[in-house]
Image (tube, rainbow, N blue to C red; front, top):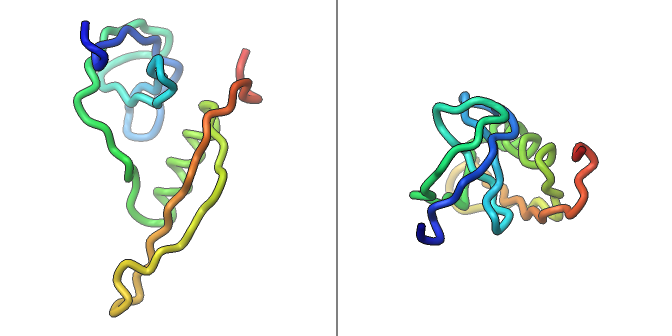
Length: 103
């Protein structure tokens, strides 16, 4: 097994039907075709820094991450395209050692 191969337990199903789990280093993993409580071998094949498009999707995704043990530290608007009315936002999150929803 290399560092991208791990065995994880699926905590719950989240938006899009993905199973949510956590890597050994704390990264959140979205796993296809699994059920809550299932232990699966995964290979991390892709890492995304940008996970959503549009404010409604960002709110939904941030809610999933907060419920799974992350804390929102900052949200910053960024005007990447000043010639348009579009505005991007970037959220900085931090892992919580003892999240409120933990057993």
